[in-house]
Length: 199
Image (cartoon, rainbow, N blue to C red; front, side, top):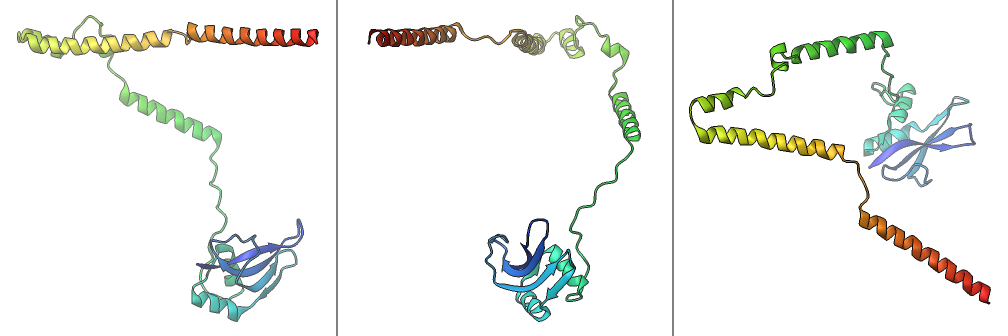
């Protein structure tokens, strides 16, 4: 696909651009292009555009990149609306207003999630209503199943807390291997020194 784009030339801090027709897949810095159709120097405001060649390439299917498109519209070579090239920064809110808004949002979220005091202070020994109902109905299999699930949950939570409490330590075998390796290195160094002394 052909595009109309800028090709930067000129010295450092003195940019000037060739307007070229090139393949979109090729780099604009490569220097290979199909045709040069204009020139633009933003410092001296000099513009040289070949209107007939630009219109020909657009009719063939070449699409101008947004910055070139805006230049062609300002020079009245093509008609249409300019494309915004640079993103506009979002308006910043005052820090105090955003902080107070966040605090009020947090309070509202917490208000919906709060539990009644009776539920929060429920003793651990008190059984769940489902367990109590199962026991009242004298269905031992259901009661045992529910209690078994509760025990599994407690076991899993106790295992997780036990894992968190244990510090991560290296295994004794790994420590022994490290010691052996260091001792072997020391022995090799000592034997090498002895050989040097003998010579």
